[in-house]
Length: 256
Image (tube, rainbow, N blue to C red; front, side):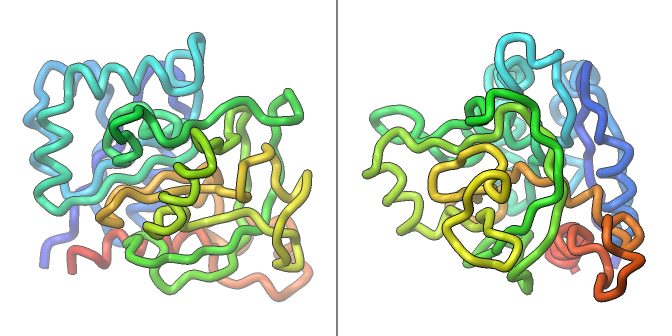
């Protein structure tokens, strides 16, 4: 079977597109990096791919708020193409800034009759956080997290705090199995306190999926841990294959 094709969508300020493409290629996909302007000119190009990846960085400098400009471009000008892509059973992955973008596109199914059930906002610390964190996956039907439980991944963001609209909205997302990855203490214990929870996310939420399990956004960077030598403790033993690689392998394996 031919290798699935992953589209890496970039914009001014994206800076993790090369790493994301490399991770998908290690997992067995073929990739193409495409600027948002080219896709706006030819929205039907998305039909040539099986996976859409929104990588990390600072799209449009995050000048309004993180991910908002790119998210609005996708929502306002690519809605039909993206909905067709999703309805065809394909996969969408948003990493860090890409997760922030996803939250504003409608692809994560977080809107109800009262508006968005959740958003991402400024870290409680009030500044940019960059460190390795421990996270626990509860995959449910999330395609990307199958076979994963505990994993170490790096984070790097200033607006990663997950906040639900209210307790009812949080409970609804949790009951639906949408809150699929959460920060934990290094020992795996919950709840996590700062800096284990680097941004103050409610419920320690580090990422969510849509109702199908085929659209997934997370704040940690799996593309930065696809080889054991990328882990800060790799020389001390006990570090196996990069935990982030499995996320990309799951996406590729979905089409085989």
